[in-house]
Image (tube, rainbow, N blue to C red; front, side, top):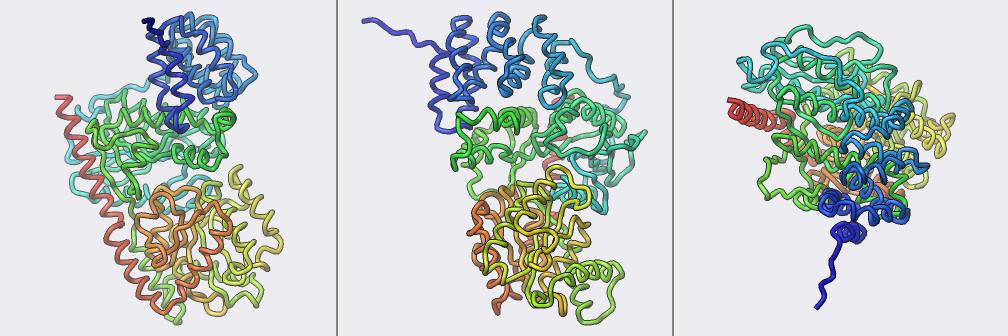
Length: 630
């Protein structure tokens, strides 16, 4: 009997082609690399065929990485020629894949030329040349005595948290502008709450600065919550365009953490250039990391594959634009480095961990804790009282009077025949994932929605929009022309500080005499919402909410009672949900429901509850690090 030898590489390539999903195929990349290393040069023919097959572009990408890991001869034959390929995604992955290969002199000139082109692929070329020792590392930032957590005793822990793509300050003056969204609000309130937790002395919140001097401390700041700046060159960019800033980002984070030393724990929250750079710095400085593990871009890949908009034959173009494989692999690397993982509540958390992230929650390989996000309900309660007092003619603070005057001025642009309607309000960044334009399109195309409410969109820089904001504004104006938007019931307010938004949410619920009726609602039309800070704030303000049915909101929104869970990709479903939410808000029991919801949010999703849970994790991580270093 003759035994047929099954080439391991061909077998793994076939397994990738037959994988039940794109994410499952990506998960097989490491196994393909192992097969190529086992088989050696005999794998070259199979890999070449896979790279040339444009009907399965995901397997072609995997074959590029496997070829780079297969030794110098294979990399030189199959990968180096791709550095000048006319196919952008192959050129990009060849540039990235060579980072794992031994230095190849014949590739240096092409990599240098690619680096000079800038952009994402230029950044990858720089990283590969750095790994080969061709370009130098960051300028040296000396680590002074006591910089590492184990080197200096202190009365409490120092925790650092990072969100690079925001202009953070304690007053959240830039909330809703550019990428300064819900996570920015969270980190400001969370930092304050953590600084009050027993055992935590300092909280360091790092974010970007542009066009200003580095304001990182010259020495370690004292107890409390401090904002440290990572200086980046040029004007502020959308988060998706910041990958080329990897080196200055890493340098700035290193300087900030060294100057503020000792730092005991660093909390990272997403697979972006800031987390990538910060993880490298943390590894160098011996700082353990905690990672909030959100399935991004995993959920996006799965959703688009399910609708047929992302296939193996179209994967390359999408990957070139959105760096899907790179971000999936980066999140895996961040998770592998983390001392502890944090996850948001999700309706099917174990399923999503296994199917989207390919993490077995029962494996015990690393600690994972579910921690809901939290909000500070005190400003919302204060806003509700003040707005009610203002409507009754009682004295209120000058800030509340100013905020209500701004809202009233907007409402006064509505035609008189629309001033008896309640408001539907949405708050957030003007970005496609937040679905602002989708909401306007859905509302404007549905007669019942238009006749039932005016729509107030809060967010974005209307005067100097980023490219993401401009794209959303263009779509909005295509549905409702800017010049007569108010006449049709659409109000674009631009971004507002959190204190203003709190007062406006209360006004949406209670109404404004002669300008808007009570019983307004809150709408989140996000494509995805991992948890939903703005949604929780709206619920704590007593508003009925419309939210995405996928992700975190489904764990706390009671469908048909406190809000509506809806497929936000469907215009008709979204518009019908707005109308149904208005009916819920007008029901006789609405005030009682609002009170119950507010109490539940305060009890289960308060910022102090979140801070206490995280403080316990940080203490455990710091203790473990100290034990391992002793």
